[in-house]
Image (cartoon, rainbow, N blue to C red):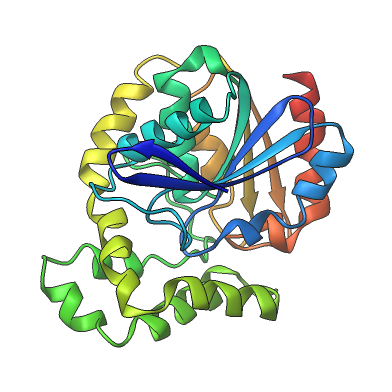
Length: 276
């Protein structure tokens, strides 16, 4: 469904099931398809799932404005207000996890628990791990001075997204249909501006995150990582944000554990939510 939240902004979300609410926020360059192995398990366990597409991520939410993650967090909270969701757990992947963290910091009384999948938020420093295979070439490319990245990537975003998906997934790779679906959602020139904007807000995001975690947040946290992704960095980063951290590292996964190792992710996520 498309939820208008004012100022010409509309947030796309899928609301299913009954019970305690779990908000799911995917990152770049994936869509809500990322949660296809998680949502059915949550529904069977008695949860209400709300898959939210933050503006600039996926291909349905729309509106003008910057892409600082604090702004996107406010928009997601407004969408939840609009559908009457007061208290919830939140699961965020990649950029979606930074949005989730800033939601939790902005309104900690609403967030029962936070799970972070494959994200080290800007502003949080962790040790480098030589074994990490997570690609980093996209960061300097997307944050090149305005005009430079546009000239380099115009007409080539498809190859860029394809290379990133292939490299970040690790040896196992993504399902072919998912890979194709993500390419369809992101790999056209009309998505270039929003893609670059998501990364060019990194300094502003870092300031917001450092302010948010000045004191650790009260809710428990679950770090979800892939051995061929961010690995132990995810739990290390989350420990800067919350006092109680649980962790699962999927042995064969890259940057997409919920897709590449759903049994490991669900096996950690359901007990974590039940204990929250």
